[in-house]
Amino acid sequence: MKPILSKAQLDYMKAKTQFEDRAKVMEKKIELARREHGEVTQEIMEGLVLETGFHDAFNQLTLAENDLIQWSHVTIKHEKEYRDNKNEIEMMYSKLNEDPEMRARVIQLAMKIR
Image (tube, rainbow, N blue to C red; front, side, top):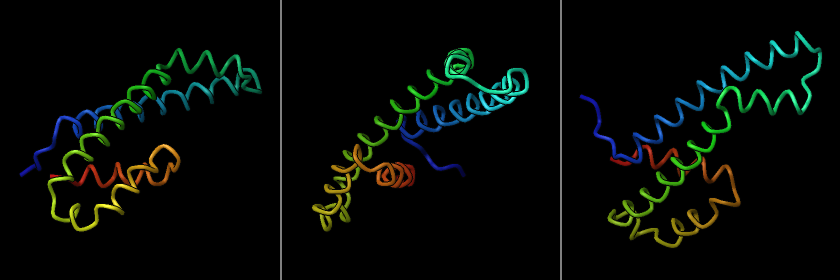
């Protein structure tokens, strides 16, 4: 039986998949451009980013991550573990914008909430 996921978790999974798909297309286009031009200039790269939808997919992923983080922060406050470790957990959430590793860890943990 599949676990029941929240809307924030489902939206994150969808955005992540879309971003990964766009990234694969982008990698192929970069390789083709490299073969054609020898060097991929900033101008070529900017064109590929727009052409492949990579920029939009990145923005959607960032929004989905933010929603997931916000949802997890609200949801976790109802757990006993939160009450027992409130200061540590709040410190973890406060560092999300400064520490990409902490952000990734919180996202991984948020995906495990049921």
